[in-house]
Length: 607
Image 1 (cartoon, helix red, strand yellow):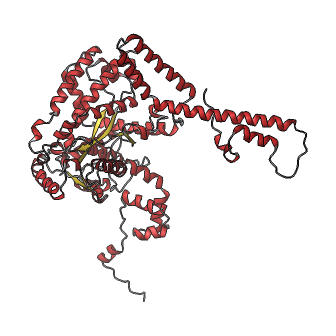
Image 2 (image 1 turned 90 degrees about the vertical axis):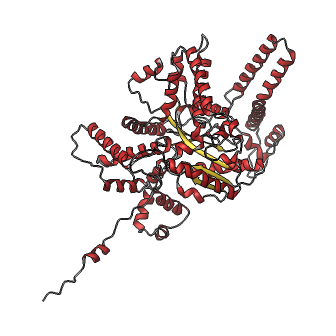
Image 3 (image 1 turned 60 degrees about the vertical axis):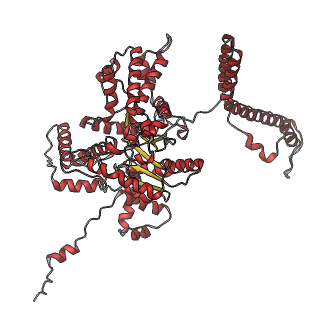
């Protein structure tokens, strides 16, 4: 008789089924970091309750995951989209994730279940049409898909509204009182309360009615999203500490920045595929820029380094940072209240963009307002580049006054300023003044635009990304990634004696022209002194290079002399290593110790 089969209940079967464990990008990054720190694969696997083979696979694909971490909006996502997947849904979800990130991060626009599902369907149909409409795959944007998508994309800190997509006015009314309690309890002064916010910037865009914009839009391959980058701006409620702006571009090494040490730029230069503030970029900014800069500010002001940082709950602002530093208390604004409460969004960003546009037109006039200069169209298309945008960004940010930086806090923290609120500058008035000035400048360039055109351009920064924009951005990511890899290495800029001498001659020539035409001796003398002092740092570089060049020439002459002496010498060689007469003479002629002589050899100067 055959043995009786062992009865197994359905519940027992389910218990024996091994469920697949979703691993977030954050966990994968921690696994890679722990292994790099010297832990064995087995030790890492035990720590994270994973199989050894799973950890080995993650370590094998480390480059793929590190690249994804750099570009991911959320480190809690559990999947990576690949080109090998032929299904349209992963591609659609990638575009959808980009759209949601832009809505909640740059535009501060609430998203609803209905709008997300509608956008998903719209993107899916667009991708299907691009395949020729012959794809049999279907997609219904069901509630089950929506729940799975949220987990895959890591949208844990995004509040998705049920019906209408509008700002949460009720939460906006209650939050200032809660914040006031925190400030009072911690005895925080206006100098110790900070806010930072990201904003999109079209760094190279003309008003749509200008002839340049019309010509650009009609050109083959025109991509309206190519000139977009993200700025991260911030400061404190006292208005006397404006943080160094972070600029996030889509290319790590644009051609116009080749050879420039990026740490010396007036902005914090960062890059990722979409040009957005991702979670990894925010963490890097917080640890390596915000904390050191604010700590130094507090030391200079002789105040305790105990500060508050207010940020919105955009996907790129991970909640895990709340306890990252003992001296910085990170407070997240309630979901969907940034447009009402965020200080930077109450006028600072709008003022900055108006100043940026005004300075852009000032630069255009300066570059084209002479007979020998380029035409406006040629300068705009061929010469105006991202380095110009960086310079204008620094200028516009520095132009924002302390009173403007203070005034934007009045809605969120009126108790910090007492009765002084009335005396603060109104950002709306500043924007209006600059808008009128921009129209005047534009008319000098024969662009024939109005105040309405400028307002439309300033508002364009708040436009929602269309399906085509999202696709264009994705295509441009691939192009820029190839360019970044294939572009030849450019050496860092360096000085030559010839170049410095030429520059000094030009400066002295300019000073002589001022002196010959100025009847005010005191003024011309002061200008000459100030100019010479201004480039004195370059004189020091010049003198150092001359000194090194002289040493190099002296050593080379001495070596040549030693070689000649040795060649004509008829003395027999000996097995003992003794300093020859020529070597002794070499030391005396060069007047440097033998041990350090080799340290003085440098590359030939260009002169």
